[in-house]
Length: 278
Length: 219
Image (cartoon, rainbow over all chains, first blue to last red; front, side):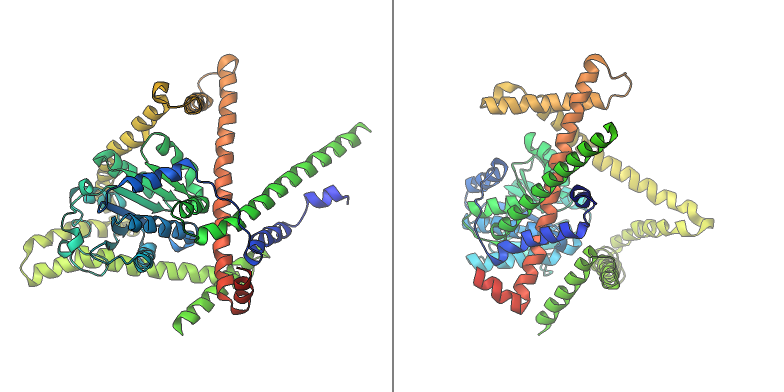
């Protein structure tokens, strides 16, 4: 068997090994790849930056633990920005498996910037049924969320006294791994004219660009790269920034393997044609 | 103590799942089945606490004990929900039509107007918006590319005319736009999957004591 044939029939486990090494090396021998901020990420940052102190931001933690590596660092960076601007934060989730994630992220944020629960931020917890919840917030937030995560009546929470519906919310930020951004755009954006920003997994980015281009999203933070860009904007060296080194190395390895595969394939095809001519 | 046990269980299960990359094996099967079982149990518990208790049990309890008779109205949707299970009894499976009719009517009424607005009108508007409001030559080029991409792709999916001449050329261009779109989506998908791997690797390196010390020294 020639070298090209062997390379074309290589065991896929060698490819896994190459990727594993590419991901591991930056953790053991760290280096810093530059992170450039793209316009969709900057748009989210600029929108939050322009909000007056005390404005209300609704943050939806709509992702399951499986997508935490991408979305949790993004959540922390966005929350850190909100608290540095002294914005009021309402947290909630439409994913049953994300109930504790939102609570953990808000508590981590509160610790780092001395935010007080029920005064500076509130976590409403999980509510099933996207449509009914999003439409319900448009009428009265206490309808879909009569109590917060700890079963305290929402109407008795001091921060929520002057917050009734989307009119009192400056921005909805959906940090999601499913179809919640589209649902917010349809139910809160189209129906109530609510401003919406999305932080999503890398898989979803290309599907959300049309909404960004049409002005239905104020900005878009996509995947680990988007999270690293946001960390750069808020001057935070978090997991996304650290992870981008491994990400870049893995991408380089994949590009090399794709090129190698194509070159080897072209060589083998050229050889096969030569054989036929002979 | 419990936290440490939890971390070691997570480490063990991560290794069990990744062992599939070598080949299918009993450790992977064990982790897979455990995940399915725990997910089902967790979702059942969540559904009980977030749906059954607040929307059925507590209203009925208050109707019976506090005389709030209006709360008996929850019996209607509850019965309709139970009627969905009539599917399993051939003799009574006609009953499933009523809740389905309600669900379809509700969904159509709630979804169609907003989806039309968000996914059709605003998207068409975004595609054909005039170039005059664009601030730079680059923005105008982008707008032209989007418009061309949409037209060519739509022509590619127009099957009532033979693809030759101008329509053939435009549909070929449509294929190129589609391929670029698929390529971009695939690139993002690769990025997302690698991110998940990075998350797991980071977790393992942070929590396995011996390896943790090597990584900490590196950082």
